[in-house]
Length: 280
Image 1 (cartoon, helix red, strand yellow):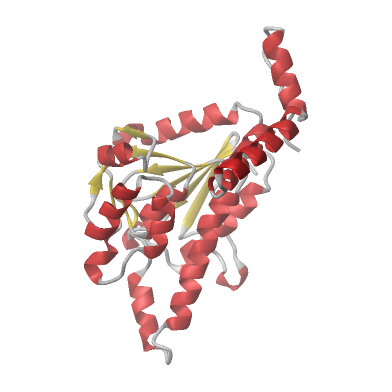
Image 2: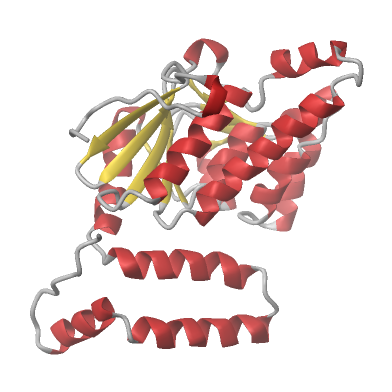
């Protein structure tokens, strides 16, 4: 694929989804841009499918080492497409099947980001609410414009943000998570940084540059080591302490036997730059 090429993503019978998601490659970094600014980049089924397909494909693309997820327009993502979901209430089951399909697909998308061996960085240029806030929390890292806001406002409309809760409660402290979920009030970019929801706050015009700086720094590391580390990080989080240490010790033994670890340690001892193994 040529650098800076924009793709239309295809997924089964949904056809071309280029109006939902743009893709651009800059060296070994892929940039995915949510592209429904007129609909506040809400997560329709089509958008969810496009993101899932792109993440799973990039996971298997050797030339790509890091993924940046950003959005067009003033809103990063307003969560699920409530118009689409409300229309399903006209179905004979009052929308149960459609709601199940949508929320299951969204959960699959979030887990695809976690399972992806390439780090995923959210570059948040605007408001992220409900499942949009969940998307930010799910990404491995997040850089945000200082004008962005974050909220899980479902409680305002009688719909507790239960699925966003999964990602948010795994990224911020319990009291902060409950504050967001129970009040539904928006928090500022600075407060999101304080809560641990994002890594860095920058001026809006510096957002993509900051995200690319972070991506390029990560991309300079051996891809095999990053893959081992990301998988181990999420797996050990769900384990009891003793199991986590056993698993981590086993992972480090296998990592020590990896060619890049041998090269990296050797280069450090010999005071030279390492030569990482190229992805294949």
